[in-house]
Image 1 (tube, rainbow, N blue to C red):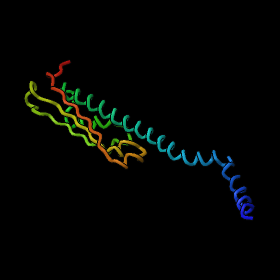
Image 2: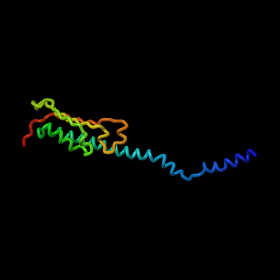
Image 3: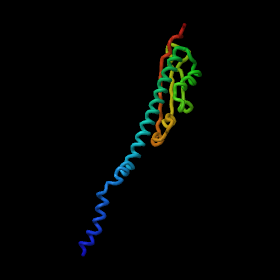
Image 4: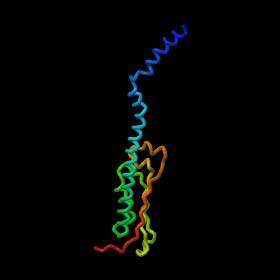
Length: 148
């Protein structure tokens, strides 16, 4: 009698464990959040690297232009922002300084750009978890005045 009871209960339960219906949907439900977060992470990392590349290129170009006396420090602040991507342009901090502007033999032009990583991407999802700062610094020695 007891043996018949366990057999009648265990037979329908064994069918549940052997059934493969819905296995794909369950696996997709478990994997999909990981895949989407990886996709957004790659996109976000790419945009942060793109913004940093623009910052570095802009700082280098502007420091070179200031060092050959083609631009003043005041003009350099606005010029360097044109190299930064549009979504980060208003949030970047630009510092342009010269060590000794009166003596061209020892003057160093220093261009420093800084922005928070969550401001350097148009879709800040993962950069808000661990906030960090992007900083680009270029120092160039001033050259003799440029003559056409």
